[in-house]
Length: 244
Image (tube, rainbow, N blue to C red; front, top):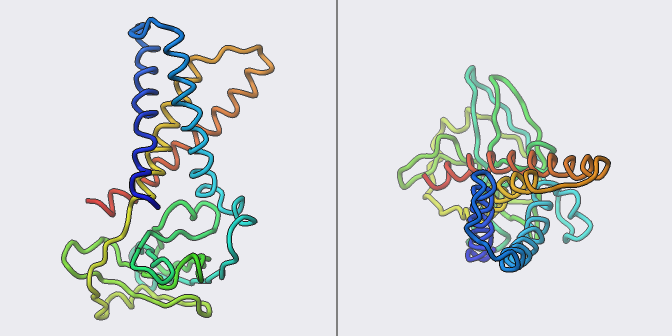
């Protein structure tokens, strides 16, 4: 993903914030209604197109499956063999490149986070995309992230038969050279989600419609607001882990 795409939501984010503050405090600031309406169309339409294009495949990966190249459904089984909770971070290498990214399981409610949280003695089964156009190496990184030049991690090549990982394996010597994990996609998705939160709040205060139509519109607003808020939260956790 082009790193410059992360600037795509910046202008809509500030413009929505400006309009929301303007609405709350009932300040005009821009008196020219024609200019204001033109800015809304110019900024809002591309933003919501980008939101649909990037957010929907991330939030609902099964929707994009008919348009994607065939991939191998890699099965992973992770068991916490200890008496304390454990968390593992998943990263992948894009097929035959030097680019590393967070890896997301395709299971519902797991597909928006690269973290696998395990209670004591708990086992989780996950499915990840592997093969050409997806990933050829999967990295299991022990959390917390080691800030030194080494990672406590276990790497496997993909695809392969169902792989089983036991958390006590991290206690062995698995230090590998630290690799840069790209966060550009997560930054873009976070900014899109955050902008959508401000945008929906603004539209809620601004939309006037008849009772029947208002119910349908407010239902859509509520769904987008909840989805965007949830994604902004989970992506913020991922970014804090990768960047700080």
